Image 1: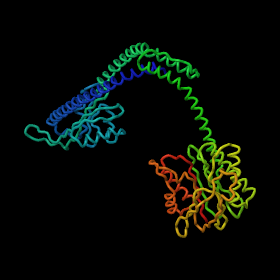
Image 2: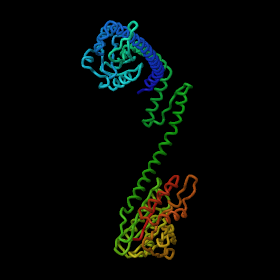
Image 3: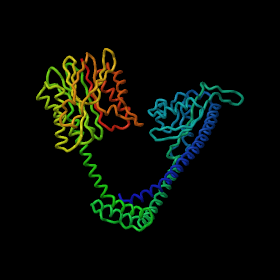
Image 4: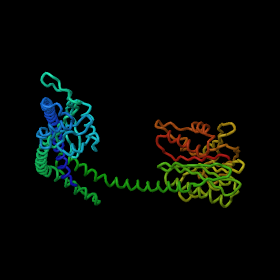
Length: 522
């Protein structure tokens, strides 16, 4: 859809909108006025009919009082006079008694069938009939097989008739309701004519506006807009040497100047976009490496274990692992690679591969020897082959079936919930970060602690304790320790979820990976 067509359409809509609103307002006012006039006419006619019927019946009663043996007979005496009265083509008068039964109606079959309005299949007719029986006078509307109809009704109570100086008592009291009905089509015919007039005026105005608007827009705007379209097409074809020449000093001229400046900046932007796309692909690959290598199942007969990692957009290089290759003990690892991005992901993969390869070839290795050998692999690959200076905090732990845990390697403190005292104990990890020196030697230490039944330990990365809120306040180890003490009685899954949810609620923006491993002695 061209801008020329859109502009013309916009102008047309602007013109049509007030005309439509004005036409609608005029129609509503005309409709209300015509309904009011119809109501007055129908009221006068209904009241006149009551007077006419009263005079007619008084004359009949004076002549022969005994003729009032049934209300049907009495109604039939005024039937011909009633049907002669017309307000419009589709108007008529009918009478019902106090039970809602039709006494007189232009459709004679309704009378002969003794039809009752209270039993009508049209709910609006039933509602009107109820008002006619209970109220003395009123205006209403209903819908039946003839369409939408207006109705004005007046109650006619025949109690006694004075004949000369004596009172003639009828055999029973009449309680009729006389109704005048007019079709909405007849009432609103003038309003519909107003609608047609407004439609014609709107159509003529629209045609004139389109002709004038097309001429003006084509002369003032379209020429320079076409230049912009051509320039845009050239740029889309990678012709960055194109220069746009628009001399007008209006907004389109300013747009042409901005377009030329945009062309100059486009090449720089495209180069930047390529670099960003490469970085994005690197981060996606690093995230896949990081998450694909994590253990999917962490099952043990003696320990209830659960873990989870929440990677950041920058991929922080978090690592945790689990291996259960013998019946005597399980192995756990937790660490964090320095830096972010693809390099961190590759180094984490190296650590994971070394951990699994060494343990599978030597299941009885000590935590100390495992750290030493993994460090050799990382230093050789990171420094000698990649030429990088990244390092890694890493702790390995082995736990036997009885709760003896042996650990080595430098990482964050290990937190333990002691079920017997319901307090938190922190185990320091000591040594040198991996990948800094080729041989650790005496710079790494192996230590041991014991887990009793229902004791819980958590391993975690700095993404938890360094999470920051909107005011850049750190989450801090103390908050983690207090929360851990409150939930230490729960299962490993529940403890993990409570801690992670609390961290996520606390932090403002996640800038680093968040990892946690929860181990509970059964």
